[in-house]
Length: 137
Figure 1 (cartoon, rainbow, N blue to C red):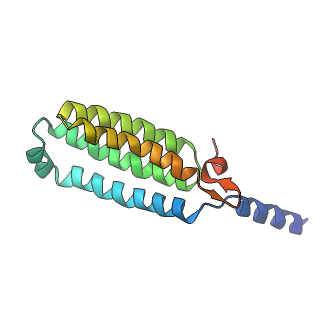
Figure 2: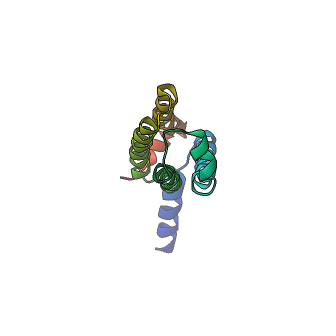
């Protein structure tokens, strides 16, 4: 009986493998979003000076979005599909804030293209299954 349970656990662990590129991108997202959140939350005076249409509340909101992005990247790491949909929400919220702050439309579009890049990276297959296919709802 114990051997059956051990085999079942090992098979389940072996099914969920991500390609090295997916792993690298998720680590990259965690690091970059952590740094962005820290910058918005603790170097906000600099950001306020550089962005004419911003307010302290907007900068803090962008910092909170950065923290949320770290949480969503960790969710993706743990095979939770909701992390991807969280990125869609934070990207749209950041785009709205950036529009209000007067950020150039090209920069806003690049932020939204990040969703497509993330989706494409999650499609990379490892042993015949993509990270997206391994995600739980």
